[in-house]
Structures are given as structure tokens and as C-alpha cells.
Image (cartoon, rainbow, N blue to C red; front, side, top):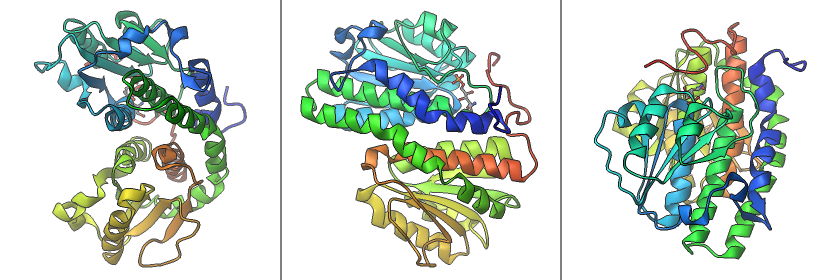
Length: 364
Ligand code: M6R
């Protein structure tokens, strides 16, 4: 049931505001994160020496955002591991380590095996899972169910944003429990998170403009996503979305890395999708963007600036609603999803069923 939408993917992109609200609302009490409905005891958040986040694909990219959010507050080591690598490594975890596994389906075999391995070392395992009663949910010590509802399109969209929203609440809870932030700070943070669905609605209203600009993308063979900090973690998800449903080779780069090799690939007309939403590195990203623009790239820039008309910076500027830096990724990712979707449709492909891919990867 596509509810009038031409594809499940675009329907699911539009469902994100409601999915986030459904996921966070039961976990907020008195404007503070509260996981009592998930039966997660407060002791789970205490005495944590380090955190490992394990997942595959989009779920792993959600984990990368989670890493930044947690590490910036707790100042303890947080590592993100690719499940198919982690499960064959010697894990550096002990009984004080927390392991968070992330999976929409709850059945991805590598993630499940990684969890089984982690369970041998620590009781502090938590899964962030969308499908009730799935194997990963059953085998982890604690489960935080996201409430995205069924995700039919192979390309993950709403599952990603609810995973990220869950990490925001977890980061806040961990920081409060370990007295790294005040109650007031936590309330402000939670208040902003509650506003995110409204900001996403504003971004979704730009869909017709995004559809227009993808006309320049459909003939591309390569595309690059660049940003720094949280924007960079988001670029990885943007590149994955574009490649899996439009078959355009897309890579994400930390903008500062370009001049260490990749800029050699930038030639006339190559699309570069850049995000510059993080104040502390804004001027650095803009100067990186000028470098690719000077080499002929077709630059689509996402920022919170009202307007950028300087042709030495970008060809198209997408204005994002003004929210604090840590929260812009919810807006940018929706733009990235729309770029991937309309590029795929513009190429005459079926974004719901990309070639060679299955929704749930239950074989190695
Ligand atoms: O069900 P899971 O979240 O464990 O799936 C992990 C990946 O296969 C998945 O996120 C995949 O990368 C996305 N469908 C890509 O859009």
C-alpha cells in the first residue's frame, strides 16, 4: 500500500516525521530521556569503560552519528565496527564495555554473529532494532525498538533516522547518568529533538526543487559527497543511497582529505554534494568547496545560510532550517534521500528494488 505515492521509498521518506515522533515519545518523561518502558535499568548506563557500535550498511552509518554524539559527551572511547569484520576479529571488549548493535531487520547474519561474539565478553549488550521479536532483539541483553513501521523499499530511509534519533536519546541518557551534562542541558537537548519532525516537514516541502536539480545528476558516472565532522558521517549515508538506487558511483570524503588524492578525480561537471552545517569547520569546508568548484565540479551545497549566490562556491544552494549544529543531519539526510530517489526515478529505474540487493541479508 503506497498510499498514493509512486514508490515505497518516497512514501517512507515522507513518513519520517511520524516515525521519529513514535520512536522518541515513549522514551521521554518530564523532558528527559527515560528507558523504563524498554525495561532498561539505570545501572546499564553506569560504569561503562568504552562503547562499541556494530552494524552493517546504513545501520552502521547511523552508528557513526551515534559515536560522535556519545563520545562528545562522555569522553570515553567509542568505536564503530563493520559487523562482518568485527565477528572475525579479536574483540577488545570486557565486562565494562557496552556493545550496541543496530539493525532494522534484526536478522542480518553478520550483525547477529557479532552480537553473539560480544555476548561472550559483556552483559552490557543493547540492540536498536525495528522488527519485533527478531533474532537480534531476542539475543541481546536489552532492546530498544525503533517504531519506524514496516520498511518495504530496499533502500533504508526512515529506519536510519529513527536509529539516529534513538542514539540521541541514548547519548543524552548516558551523559546524564554519568553527570557529564546538567538536567537543564538535557532538557534543552530533548526539546530540540522533539522539534526535529517539524523541521523535516519543512525540508520535505523542498522535494519539487530537489527533483529539478537531479536532472543534472542522471548522466553522471561519478559523484562525491563532502563534509566535515557530523556532516562527513552523513555524507557516507548519502553516497550509499545514491549508489544503491541510481547506480552512480558515489563516494563520501572528509572534505579535508580531498587534496590528499581524491581531488584528482574532480573534473568538469562532476556532481559534488557538499554539506556545511557545522559552525566550527564551516570556513574550512567552504574553502574545500571552492577548490572543487575551481576544477569545474557541479556543486550542490547544503547549509543553514539563507542564500549563497557566489558562483565560485556552488551552482545550487539548499537552505536548511536553522537548528543547532548537532541536529542538522536529520535535515540533510532527507535532502540526500530525495536526491537519490529522484535521480533513480529520472534514470527510469525502480528505486524500491535495486538490482543485486535484498532487504535483509541473512546469508554471508
Ligand atoms: O536490517 P539491517 O539494518 O541489519 O540491514 C543492514 C544493511 O543491510 C542495510 O542497512 C542496508 O545497507 C540498507 N538497506 C541500505 O539502504
